[in-house]
Structure formats: C-alpha cells, structure tokens
Length: 222
Image (tube, rainbow, N blue to C red; front, side, top):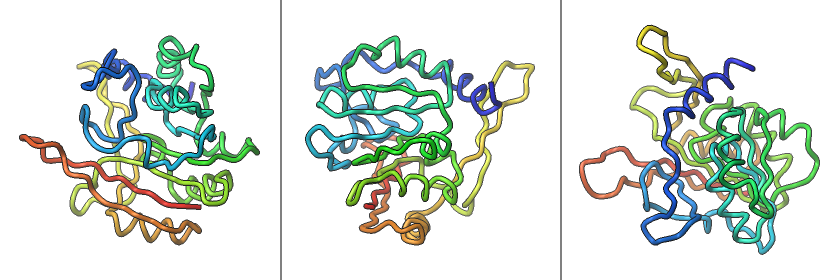
C-alpha cells in the first residue's frame, strides 16, 4: 500500500459515518460543504437524464450513491481501501454505482469512456497537483461537461502546494499529504489556462452561528 493510501486509510478511521437520514428525512443526498444540511446539491453538475458522472476522491460513497439513485451511472474513485470498503458495505448494492481503488490521474489516463460531469468534494481536486489533474479531467469530459469541486478556502498568504497533517497515535508523528490551495481568482486563471470555460469560483458562507469558515466551490465547463 502506498503512503498516500495509508494516510487516507488513517483519516477514514477518524471520520464518522454519514447519518442514516438527513434533516429532510432523505436516505441519500448530495452535500458540497463540511456542514450538515447546508448549501446546494447535485444540480450544480447539470447532468442529463441517465448521465455518466465521476467522483474523484469518493470517500465512503454517499454522494455517488445519491447520483446513482437518481438514475445516473456514478463512478467513484478513491485511493483508500478502507474508505472504499465502507462505501461498498453501505452502498455496494446500489444499481448504477461503480467503485474503484485508484489514484485519480492514473484512473483518468487508463479509461476511454467520457463523462458528463466530474466532481470532487474535499477530494482529489484538493490533494492532486492541478497541473497533472486538470488536463487529465479535460480529456475525459464530454463536450459541454461540467467540472465542479469544493474545498476549504485557503488561509490568507498560504497558496499553492501546502502540507496537511493527519494525526495518528500520541507517540507517532502525523502523516503528511499535499494539498493545493488557491483563491477563487487563481483557480479561475488555472482553469482557463487548461482549456476550461464558463468558470465560476466563489466562497459559500458558512451557515449562521459561530462557524466562520466557508466552502470554496468552483465550477467550469469543458
């Protein structure tokens, strides 16, 4: 197992399972943000009926399972065996859902079939060099297809490749993974440079209360 897979397996053990139902009583739902019952849903993907969609960094599979339940072919990719085991245990019988263990760029390079949308929710778009990932996605998006991703906004002054630390035991050093932090304007420039159009990058405010960190949501079209 690669160091990256070990890191995300460790992260998986620290994350709670998705609730059985959300605040509206739904058993599946789409969530772009780090907050429950907050923000837009799958409509950002602008998928046609029966469309084919790719989740890069699908984690435990809740978003992809929701799209499959809407009649899409939803393909989820994650590097972590533990994350995918949890996804298969809960959602594995869902018609239209495919789950693959792979690194994002490698998966995109091996396939040929196109996608109507590619998305990432605090996933591979945040943790993969965009110079490698953006052109690989562009090759697999069908004409007019959507790329949509969300992640935490950058800390002021900390842009580009940064380090994320995943804690382990008290007597162990944390695991380190790379992430790529950019302000909305920088993401817009990067996407245009890699051939994307209709780019919209903005920070969605956190829900009311004491929370202050919003969610950066970026949309672009092939």
